Length: 229
Length: 345
Image (tube, rainbow over all chains, first blue to last red; front, top):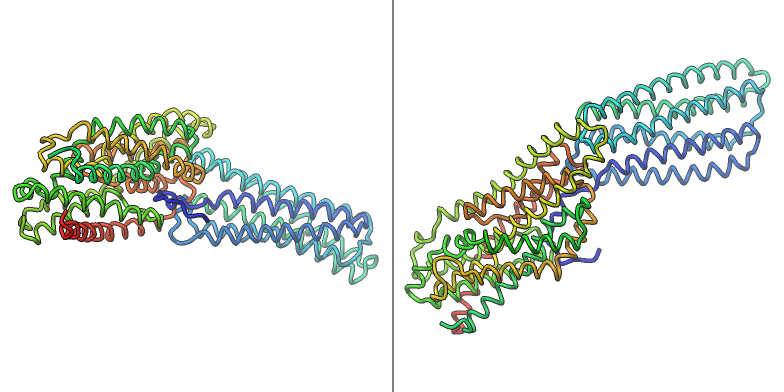
């Protein structure tokens, strides 16, 4: 950086971790949106698209990692935030797992072609849709942080945020129900799918379920952060 | 003694250099927060700052100027021995302060012009006492103690006041509204008023750092009476405005583009608290650092939960600059004084 002939108050203003936090949440959302596309392509047997999307998800996940590292790197002990820094880092971790898990599932999609009865593919798509909806609701939740900061945590805005947390939790519960149902269906069709097929699909279903889990976990930590201020 | 005495001319030039520096950096810092929040454009800020800084300096700057000139070192007693000594001593003081400030600014250190000039004037007093011209007990230690205490108190006061102001805004306005962004728009106007206030406050306190030593010399040389001549204050005011116009706008730009966190409600709280504390000190004739008070006020807003991220490590740097500035400025001033006497000026 060019040295200016300046004595300034600038150093007192640290860069806010909240904007990068929102961008990071959206990167997670982008990964899951791509994953959803990939799951649809997978069910139609379009493995080329699955491969392409896998690379795209890899890139987005990497971008999310860089943002996460920047946020962590800038939170030295001298930085004063309106929330506890530990709480913020505790919530960043599960949020980062959203893109990690999406990447994992996307990779598993590339490993094997989909050959299963329509009953399975319908449930599979439903599970993906509900998971994506959960993650998108979670993005909305993280978005309210900027409003919270603007009004400096007014009671009304805090209540709005907390009600979104409850919605994310509710949606994650629905994902759980579909997930359990799917695993049962897969095992019921073990004759058609074969051992490897059962293993592959179970791994995929549990991976997608875990994405919603992570969103719920992050939402829970976000609530702690907002309440423990 | 003539106004065109080379010594007086050198004092005027050195004083103008200090004024330029104060305008270019400290004033720009105080004003930068208004640009950061988008309340005013850079052009508007410079016009507002020029008018109110000048007014503050000319109409409300005499008390602090007298403190710097006569409050710490008994220049009348020194003048009784030799009027010339005061003029040389004050030239040494302003050169030392100017040198230290230039160095600090070059290395982007948060050093205060106020602390530098107080240290430099003290250095002259100490060397005068060392040479037996005055007694050590003739240096006004209680006033010096009050000044140093005010350096500690003023940022804390700024923090406290900013904390209270922002908490009130938060409780009564921000939390009652549906749309916090609209409130911010309403505060834009208030912030324009505060920008005027802070420029006035800054002018009233910081002009002394530039013209205090000049007045002391003029007073000793019998070219100025018990009150500071108007032309001296006008010169100081013009020097600071010139500094702002020739360099300060760049500083404002740098600060303005980087402080986006300081929205109008936050900026208003920090600036109003700073300006109030500074004007209060100008009234009781104590020279304090506007910049350090502003840092305190920003921390106050942060403590009230108004800012996304505040870096408290600045406190350590400022504290260090306090401890270093006074001895360094005093020593440099004493050395320059001895040097000037040595070459027979």
